Amino acid sequence: MPSVEQLSKQIGVRVKDIDLSDPLSRSDFDFVYQSLVNHKVIVFSDQNLSPEQHVSFSKRFGSCDVHSNNQYLLDGFPEILVLSNDLKDGKPIGVVDAGVEWHSDLSWQVDPPLGSILHCLKTPKIGGDTGFINMGAVYQELPNHLKKTVENLEGVHCVSKLLNRRVTISENRVNAREFYAQQLDKHPPVKHPLVYRHPESNEIILFASPRFTIGISDIPEDEGQAILDELFEVVERTNAKLEYHWATGDVVMWDNRSVLHCAMGGYSYPDIRLINRTTVLCSETTRLQRVV
Ligand SMILES: O=C(O)CCC(=O)C(=O)O
Ligand SMILES: [Fe+2]
Image (tube, rainbow, N blue to C red; front, side, top):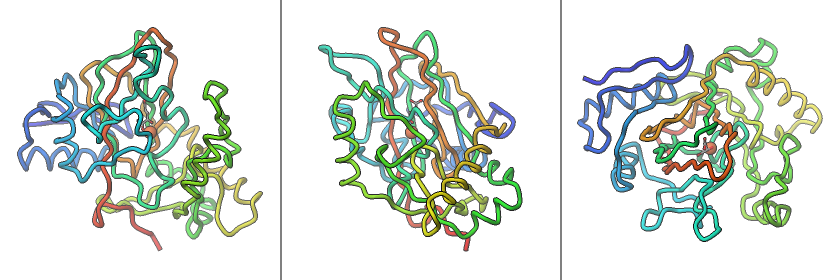
């Protein structure tokens, strides 16, 4: 019988006695799904998974995304994006700096995904942790005036860093400005309500992040930025947080609808980190719902 062990008070559990290399029984899968909804981040230790098995497990939740950063997809497995600072023939084998600010994956798309599933193949000696924040808890922590303010407003989400005054453009990326300008052409900003209802827990979720939410729609720019500053202060100081330290063989899945996450960094070549990632898309029944 699988069971869970709490990883922090308000977010994250380790799910024990599940082997992901075997197809899960209906009841084990239901247990895993319910653990994800209830605890938002689930960890499975010591998993020996082939890329096929990683993809098969992911597809139990829904269809998989093929990431637009297609130069770092695993050979033969378009559903798997490689995250790594390792080099082959002097060139990176994966995305080196994925997710270094707080964000929800692909919130700059009209239909953000259900979650991501990461399988850790190599851990660096120092650093490489991933942070998670429970955005249902953050909503509950908002002062009443802010809860009222966010009720009817929509955030503007954009993948390009060019329009975001809260992030810096790394000097390490070659032709960074051209890259982000092209990205803006390809993916114009989209709007999402600042609060959504989670379809399975019915919890109200604050849906905004410093990385992708660049403003608030239909109100003056400076008022929108002031509201985002207030919201992100609550995000920064919440205790509903987990900083996860990876072990080789870990599989970590997060509910992308209800958490923000952030790669904490702190390691550098030749100290290697290697993680394979899949991303599961939402369906009609699993996507976030409007509150009003
Ligand atoms: O590498 C990490 O710790 C997280 C990277 C990330 O943001 C992602 O895979 O979506
Ligand atoms: Fe991410």
